[in-house]
Length: 293
Image 1 (tube, helix red, strand yellow):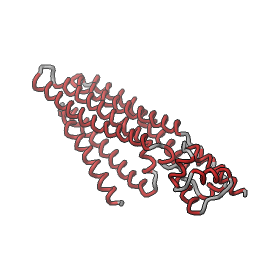
Image 2 (image 1 turned 90 degrees about the vertical axis):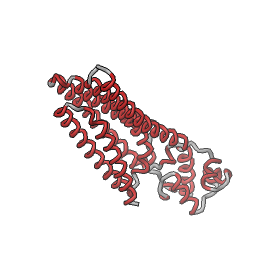
Image 3 (image 1 turned 45 degrees about the vertical axis):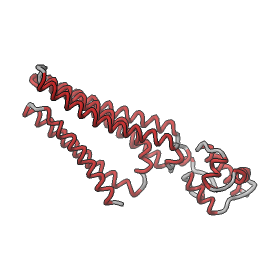
Image 4 (image 1 turned 90 degrees about the horizontal axis):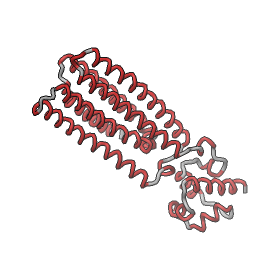
């Protein structure tokens, strides 16, 4: 009797957390609404196969479903989780924009040497701490998600997942569009005006910063959805490999770009280097994921 009572209480609690009506829950597990009502009132108990289905649906063990649910697993605050990833997205996007603003400043004042260097160092001094803070917040928030044992279906609705995915796609489209616009503006200023190459380089880097900041924001917000898939044991090592490769490649390309540009006074090489880096990361990610299937 105690087990039946605990099950009925747990079922009501889990259904309420997921904002499901008795009828909606019944449809998901293939029973009638009256059956759900009987289970929740303690008048009847489900068969083992239904208990298994319910435990998978709510991402809890069978022992927890018929006994006491661990506090750690149930204390998941969706609003706080989303708020954290909005903060992470803003930190990363701000860091990207500030960094590229510093590069744009340096490109514009290139002939003045010291001033250009100071501008770049200030942008690094501001952006790097933002990246570190975003990384630490991401790790702490994701660790809480792992401990909660929540599944994607328990937290987000299909419409919320679709909305986040569309925003990610729009961010990628914006990146490509602004990159081509930046290249076009750079060429127009250099070859069709008398404003000088320094201004062309500065505007190019500023537009590139806006493009990267925008897509970074969209991708960081989408991470709140992607984490559920990434946290599966079989995907963790794969994503770590891709992330490490991407970080090393982009840091190397940035270092090469800055060194080459300062020595050659040609700041337009970003038109080639960064698109190549993005393509290389994409190809590597596809290769690694196919290899681990």
